[in-house]
Length: 80
Image 1 (cartoon, rainbow, N blue to C red):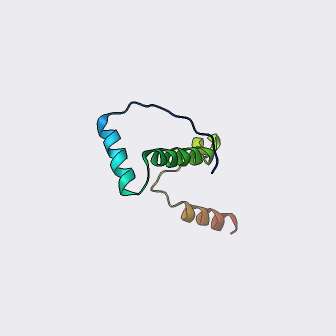
Image 2: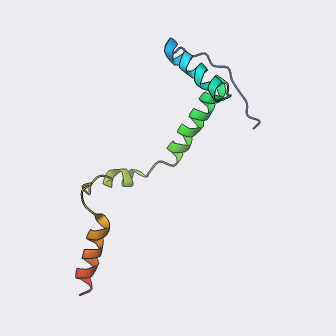
Image 3: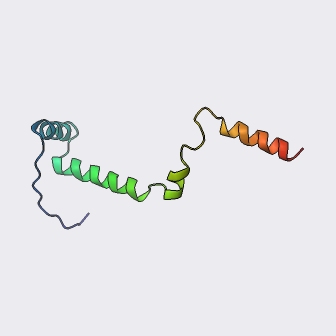
């Protein structure tokens, strides 16, 4: 992984910095590696985000509806 790096100074609440350091140490990483992994994961999630059309229709069918059963019923009625 030969990527150009740049130094960045950020200000965070002390408890967040302490958590990041403890997390990194517990996992054998540096704080920079923890942040890098987190940002890579965020980028991957964003690149694989559902299309706006899918987002629009998500949630239109109530959670209590058994979509598979409803589809089978529809096909049964259609092909009688």
